[in-house]
Length: 75
Figure 1 (tube, rainbow, N blue to C red):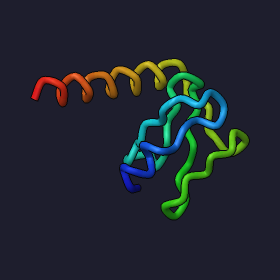
Figure 2: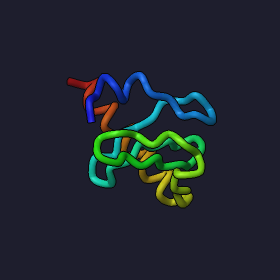
Figure 3: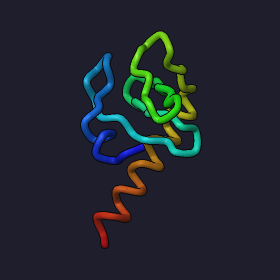
């Protein structure tokens, strides 16, 4: 999925930033704990279609995102 498109998209519930999970083909909102599917390259931004992430998964994804941000900031 195009990184510029991901940068423009926000969570429909909280208007927060979304993180792209290429492995799962989902857009993640760690604040609301929702994973929005990407079907055939098109993000499905409906809360009824979103998967609820477990607490452990939310924490893991948030920490991974922070670690990636920290490593790019130090370069």
